[in-house]
Every structure is written in C-alpha cells, then in structure tokens.
Image (cartoon, rainbow, N blue to C red; front, side, top):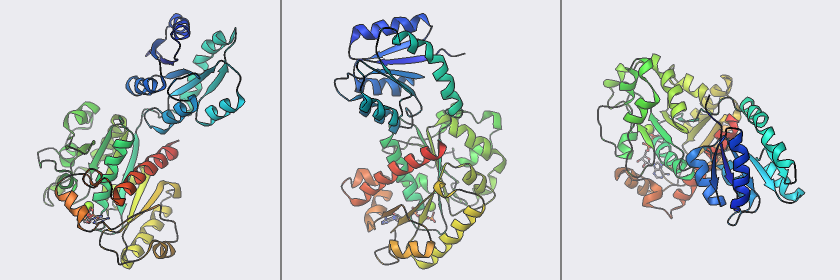
Length: 385
Ligand SMILES: Nc1ncnc2c1ncn2[C@@H]1O[C@H](COP(=O)(O)OP(=O)(O)OP(=O)(O)O)[C@@H](O)[C@H]1O
Ligand SMILES: [Mg+2]
C-alpha cells in the first residue's frame, strides 16, 4: 500500500519539526511549507493525503487558505486539519465551513490525540470520496448547429485550464461526421484522432497512451483529442471502444471536456449519462429555442437531473433574435449565462487559432467566458460531490 503523505504548513520551524518527528515515527511521509502560498504550491505539486496547517500564517489567513484549497478541483479533496494556538470559535466555524475536516486547539496532549486520530480521519474520507481518482466529465451539446457550440467548448475549456491551473484538461472532439476543434485550436490534421483511438484494442487505451498522443495546441493550455477529419473517415469509428476511452480519460485528466455538437445518438447518449455536467448551448432564433426545449425535455425523460444541465445562451449570429427573458419563457427554465455578440471578432480569434481571452482580454465576452469556466467547474464538482 502507498505510504500516506502529509503536508505541514506552519511558519514556525520548531513546531513544524516537532510535529514532523511525531509523524515520521508513525511512518508517514512528511513535507513542509512555511507559508500559505508555499503550502498551496506544495499541495498542488505533491497531492498529499492530508494537510495539517497552523493558524498563524504570515501571508494568508487560515480561512483563506482553506477556501483556496477547496476551490481548486485538484486540491479540493485533500483532507485538512487546522491547529490553532488559541480557542477561537469564529475561526473554527469558518474553517469547518470552508471544508477543513478537524480543528484542534493546541494543548499538552492534543498533538498525540491528533496524530492518533489520523488513520480514522483518512478512512472516513475514503468512504466519503470513493471515486476521488476520477476527473470531471463535462459535455457540450446543442439542439441545432452553427450557434457556437464548438467555439464555446474550446474557449471555456481553455478558461477552465487557466482557472484551475495546474489541473489537467483534455478536450475531445466527438462531433460526427466531422470535427472542428483542431481547426479552431490550430492543431495539425495529423494521423491521431478519435477514430484512431477507437481502433485501438481496449487494453491499449491507457493513461500513458493518451499522455503520449494528445496534442497540446499552443496558447490553449489543454490536451486535444481531435475529431473525425472528414465525413468519409467517420464511418471507421468503433463505438464499442468509446466507454473504455471515457473511463481512461476520466482517470487521466482532472477535466475531460467533450464537444458532442448536436448529437443525441447511440454513441453520445451513454456519454451524456456519464457526464457530471451537460452544457447546453442555446441560440437566439425561435426554431432553435423550440428544438432546445425538446432536447431538454428528452434529457429529463432519460432521468438526467436538472442540476446536471447548464444552459448558456450564445448570441453567435447578431443582436437580433430572442432576448434571454423571451428564450427562458419559451424554454421554461433559467439560462445560466449569456455570451454577448462579438461581431467578427470571435471568428477572427478562431481563424487565427487563438483563444478569445488572449486576443481580446478586455472584451465582455472574455469576462463572461471566464465566469462560465468558474461556474461550470464549480457546478460539475458539486454534482460529483
Ligand atoms: N458570441 C459570438 N459572437 C460572435 N460570433 C460568434 C459567437 N459565438 C460563436 N461565433 C461564431 O459563430 C460561428 C460558428 O461557431 P461554431 O463553429 O463554434 O458553431 P457550432 O455550433 O459548433 O457549429 P456546427 O454546428 O457547425 O458544429 C463561428 O464563426 C464563431 O466564430
Ligand atoms: Mg461545432
């Protein structure tokens, strides 16, 4: 069995060393950080099983530290114990609210009690998060074409990678019969794509295989699995390999983000069922909104819970069309976010294979895309629990 890794965050070297000695005696692997920021960096790098943190940090309050660890999907599952030198009910309450598992006030015997309690705390956590090794699965879906689903998928994925750095993000193009993400992200139309993966024997679809093969397009901060390069080639897709592919992607990346386009098919439905979050892009024309309503009802009929659906209104074609309120009235559900019309600038960024946030960092669309990334990752985490 792997040895348990514990990260100690404490400004005071003497008390850190004292606790480290106690933990070494119990065979834990111990690492040290002398500030909150150093602690976050080490937590991300080393992924300890447990963090023990003193409340007297020079750069961050312990509550801020708990919040920062809790907001990042990479560190949000790490168990935290807070050690305080004085009883402070307000601080204790805030720490527990921010996700810390235990709060101890230091006194004679308390260190021994805490060290002895660690196996029990870790065991309880395992029971609460049996799937903690799986990343989050987010799919992008639309009821009609040409409304910016692929553009949003690529750009929101890039923002998720940026906001959750150094979380790893895989983006998969499953639009049939032809993908467009490699065009948007500027990846070469090489040999490797979803069709090639589906031709692999299941036991060769491994984490190492994806790490070696997925493409890192410049500027995008994500690992891309390109789609079918042309309609003729798409016939070679082997649907039987898709479930294994999804399982391995989830184990290999913190986020797997899939562009499904407007597909509600035998291939896409199992992926939709598996997804933690379904981002439903909605256009502003009446027929598209009516189709979206049908797709929404269909998904609910399949047993998909409402909190797994994340509708976004995208003004991809102009200022005309339905307003958010008008669309919501027809749809019968709330739209989470509206992406404003960006005129030709979105197409310009796409044509130059650059994320919108990099090309037009001050545009409202960049701000909304960042917001979308934050809300989508939070909601997906909430759903996974
Ligand atoms: N908010 C926006 N403002 C302006 N243009 C946009 C906006 N969103 C998307 N576009 C543009 O809309 C066009 C279509 O986008 P995209 O290819 O992403 O749509 P899609 O729904 O994936 O289409 P398809 O059905 O072909 O897969 C692109 O030129 C893109 O730049
Ligand atoms: Mg598309």
